[in-house]
Length: 269
Image (cartoon, rainbow, N blue to C red; front, top):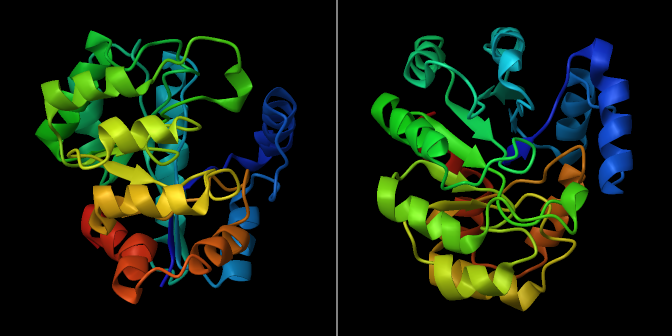
């Protein structure tokens, strides 16, 4: 079984323009067209089972439209074997954070995505702390971009390792996921400071950049039960990243934990 814990999809009417803008801004290549169908095709090519779609709010006013799209995706795939499960998005500028998080929970959505760089807010901001505390209250997963974003090279890193450590200490929530293997491009610091902490790492946009031995060292120190296979599709191809991970020579138990067992447990599936 394969679960990709970090992917992105967009409504058909904006998928092409959104993918084009994001690709241009980050210098990345898209492996799908950004649509729901494109994601299903990517899952099929990889013989993967589930993609977790993580929407990002770039402004608070997008909350309702993004939530409605997430609900429509989840309804579409609720009885499918190969499926997309969409999270909701939250923005630190949202009003009534507790009420919005309660609504997300009531709709059966498993979690939320936040992105400090796209939301121009440091991860230890009190509003993110409130979001995390509400997530803990309502048993919702929180995935955050962490580390350097390719679209913001040269700008302050809004979710650096030291600030993440402060957040972990303050909130101590066991359904907090740091995307990009703890902190994108800051993996030596992840090994030194974050590995072993009460937090998950997803592997999105990692395998083509990280040194194999460093990856394995971080997994060994952090524990394979706290690592989630993820690609950042459409910015990486699911099949390609699965093949890279499979080439690392990890023990079957470790590989199974990363590919699907940890995700099933976290998602309560």
